[in-house]
Image (cartoon, rainbow, N blue to C red; front, side, top):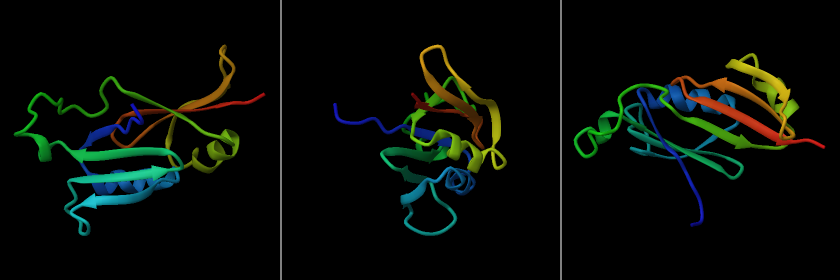
Length: 126
């Protein structure tokens, strides 16, 4: 295995792209390549790649996909300079859990994205 890139189902790709741009992600590619009726998008920040796709685009092929926002998914994202990153996004997002040092030595915080998915950001700070 070489990598894992989650493909997260969302209702509104353009709204999701705008939200993740607040977190420093950049749009890498989309289907279609231009326009407002996007059905799929790939975004990247550093080595972290996330894909977003509309429920409708796979409704016939994979009806087993849950149509509920959020779900039982938490994305755990490691990064550097977590305090600076937290300060840059805290007023643009819904913070679920502020910066805290965990029992396993990481400094973390958690937010809710615009589709009700939980994102936890973490850094090992000496």
